[in-house]
Amino acid sequence: MDLRLSTFRFSKIISLSPLSTIKFRHYQSSKFFTIRSNLPFSSQKAKHYKELEAAVNVVHRACRISVDVQKSLFSDDGRVLEKNDNTPVTIADFSVQALISLELEKHFPGIPLVAEEDSAFLRSNNLADAVVKVVKDHTSFPREHLTDNKVLAAIDRGGSNAIAFESKPATYWVLDPIDGTRGFLKGGSALYVVGLALIVEGETVLGVMGCPNWRDNPLNESLIDVKECLKEESTRGIIMVAHLGCGTWKSKLSDSFGGLMSKDNFWERCFVDGSSVVHEARFCIPESQKWDSIPLSNSLSATTNPNNLGEKQVLLLPTCCGSLCKYLTIASGRASVFIVRARTRTIMKAWDHVVGMICVLEAGGKVSDWSGSEIDLAADETARRVISPSGGVLVSNGTLHDQILELLSSKSSVVS
Image: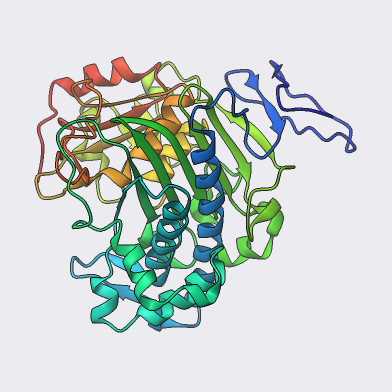
C-alpha cells in the first residue's frame, strides 16, 4: 500500500483495528497526516531532498552516539569534562560533531560547516583517542581510514577559525552537536537535542532535530528517569524534520536507531497548538532565566502546576535543557510560546536557534525578535556564529505572536 501521498483530516479521535498499519493521533488543530516512507515527502516536492536525507541519517547515527556515551556516564566519571567557560561538555559533543562533519563532507564537500566545538580542548587534555574510538564505532567510513588527525580535522572544520564568510548571503550547515549538555550530564530527567540545519544563500531550507529522550508525556518529561527510558526501545525518542514549503514532521527513533532511517518509518505531521488567549497558553523560558525577568510578569504570574492555575497565571512548562528542546516542544504542539530575553553578558549562538526556527515555522508558528523583526542570521558577517536579536527571541504558535509582542514592547530593555 502506497501511503506517500495519503492525507487525512479528523476532528475527533479515531480508534483503529490493531491490524491497521496507519497510526492516528488527535491534534488540537484537528489536522493529522501520516505516511510511511524514508522521508515524509517526495524528491519532486523538496528541492533539497538529498541534503535532507543525508542530514536525517547522520543525525540518527549521532543520536546513537549520544545514548551510548550517556550510558557510560553512569559508571565512568572520566567522561564528564568542563570547558574554560564552565559549560559542561562530554565526549559525545566532540564525537557527534566529528561524525556529522565527516559524513557531510563526504556527500557535500563544497558546503562549509558552522558548529560549536573545536579540537583544542581535546588535544590539550589528551582525549582524542576516546573520541576517535566512538566515531569509528558509528561512522560509515572504514575504521582503518579514520586516523586521529582526520577525526580532529573534521571537528575543526566547524570551528571558529575554519572559514571566513563575506557579507553576501552564504550556503552552509549549522550544527549543535548536543544542545542541552547540562541535561545530558544529569543522567536522568532532562531532554537534549542533536540539531542540524542547512542555510542556502542566506535562507534556512531544512532542519533536523534528534531527541533521544523524548516521551509522549507532555507535562512531565522532566520527571522521567533516563535509565528507565533507555530500557524501553519502543518509547525512545523522536527525530523531527522540516523542509522549506514541505512542513514539519516527526518519526520515532526506535525503528532503526542503530543506523539509517528505515523506508518503513511512519512520519506524523507536526502542527503548533491552537491557543489564542495569552493567559491560557503554555510557556517555556530558558533555565537560566526567571519568569520575573520577562516583561509579561508585570501582568501575568506563572506556575508549573497545571492543577492550580489561577485566573491571571500562565502555565510554565519545566522543560530542560537547552533552547532546541523548547523549539521542538512548540513545533510539536505541546507548548504555545518560548521566550528568551537577551542579556548583555550572554552571547546568543546561531546553532541554539536556527534548526528550531525552521521546524516551528514549517509547523505553522512564528519566530521573531522582540521588535517583531525576523532573526538576522547574517548579523555576524564573518563567522555566522552569533545572532543579535533586539530584546530577545520570541517563538510562538503564530496566533499569539502579536499579542505577546504588544505586551513586551513597553518594558523590553536588555538586562545583564
